[in-house]
Length: 383
Image (cartoon, rainbow, N blue to C red; front, side, top):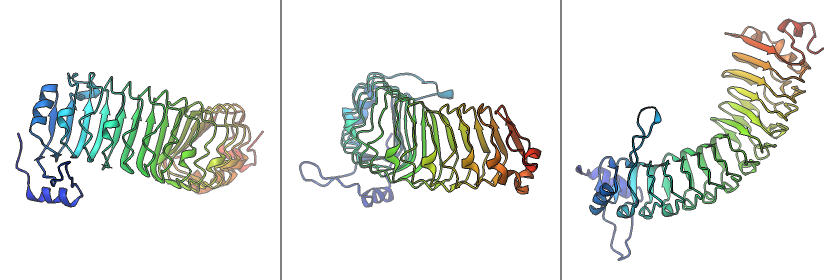
């Protein structure tokens, strides 16, 4: 049921720039629905569309969504969103979820602004070109589990995503064409996009708070991030077998969250040589081709959960840690079979603040040589 639309809300919408001139040159007249909208069938889509609402002050849910523990609560018979063609603004989320017969977003071409866009598990949705009128996303853009989605064309007008840009489990997506004008992202999270080989279309990006890329076997370059100087919320790279270089991260001077690099094709960390501040955890695990930690020389202190360097079978040098003088909580270097020289850690293991830290946990084992804390005091840091 439609609830009364307050004068104050109408004023906010108008001064926020939601103005529109129809083809007949007449001024745009708001016909708002105040509250959340739930459309679970084609009949409900048709019925709502007949009322001609063009502004929704709450969330717009299309589909049946998920229940407890992430299980889908059902599928819909929705095949067309054309009845929604009057909508130009949704203040909350637009959630289009579990619609196996929905092939197109046609009907949303007049949409100008949304709080968030969430497209999940729409089995035959191939593109989002119908969003070409969208100019503003106030929070998140989430594209997850759309098995036929092959293009991001339609997002060319978007210049910033303050929240999360999450792109996961879209096996047909090959590149980021459509995101060329995106300048700012809160958190970019990419996971299990098996055909995604290029993210080069993010060429305009100058601000990024967090970067996480996981299980993307074709991504071989991060060069597009060349304008990024800080990652306040962290950097995580995992299961990236084609990634052999961190070129593109050479201007990053600070990482405010954790830095984690797991099971990549990296041979070097030298592109991190500008990094001076790492506020939290450092984890470098299972990188079979990594021979040294050169590039981390400017790091002097690590907070958070500490440091873990483990299972890097080609690692022979930790000279990159030579200026490290403090690590909070855990300090772990394990199962690096070729690593024998721990002398670059002398500064750390002669610092009483490190040795006497609260909840101290030091674990050095499974390497070619495994010095104890006492060994460092007697210059026995290598065989």
